Amino acid sequence: MTEYAKFPITGGEDDLALIELVLAGDHRAFEPLVRKHERRVFRVVLAVLGNVEDAEDAMQDTFVKAFRHLDQFRRDSRFTTWLTRIAVNEALQKRQARKNSVSLQESPEVESKSLPGRFEPWTSNPEKLYGKQEIRQLVERAIQALPPIYRETLVLRDIEEMSAEEAAGVLGITVPALKSRLLRARLLLRESLSVHFEERRQLSTRILDSAKQVGNMMRAGLTRSAGR
Amino acid sequence: MAMLSCKEVLAHVSDYIDEEGSAELRRALEDHISWCRRCRVVFDTTGKALKIVLDVEPFEVPLAVSARLYTRLEKVLSES
Image (cartoon, rainbow over all chains, first blue to last red; front, top):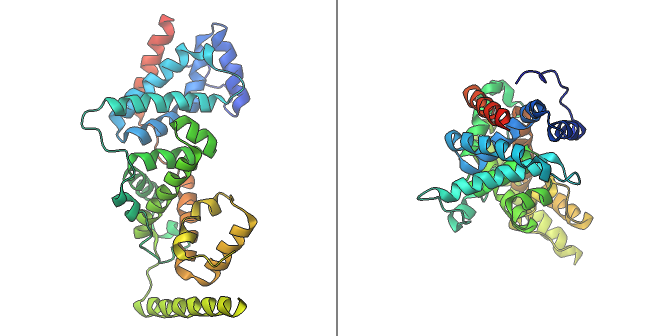
């Protein structure tokens, strides 16, 4: 599969041109489509399943299914959305088939954990503390540690940059449910990364800031009482 | 809009980042974080977290995983 190695890979128009070639019988044109979307599909199935072994199976099955059903792709939607829907379905089926499947309900325990507990500002230059590769590992670990329903939501919205409507449609949930999960996912991620990126400040500065906070709260309350 | 509590403000972090919600809500949120340091830190660092996530492009496909994908596809494509 090297004939199309130099095919330009940019936007959705290239997808359509390649799809037409595949449907016309030039199966080699499927390769650049795979190359372009491989990482996205891997990230999505990994987010749903949580481990590389299962994600590999789901990724292979996704592309095989996409190839065999390419004639069912409707041109009125984006190819990425269509492919991501197949990927999520493949991964969800695998997850459901697992024995001792993890609970996928939102639990009160997770809800309370997603409430912010760290309130220190972050350093403005995390690159000064860690190398890029190290930051990537910290981010990957933080995402992998999220409960599955929050992890998959975060990956679709904040990494694959799908709209709330697209992501909700792909996951088979309502937009309000998606937004609720996304809020918790983002707050949990922030909490987890805070451990690494918070500014190291002296205790005296922290105490001073807390005193200022109390003063600000009292002033804001008094201003509003006076205005009523 | 009535004064928002910290809990109410934190329930809208996502909406604020995604630039959703009414102008009135946005003003109320900005007013709150102008004097509440804790909520301001949460808003600021949540935005920073998402920027870092995008910047580092997490989760590359391992080379061996990618190679096995192409091997399987090669077979499927040649049989079709």
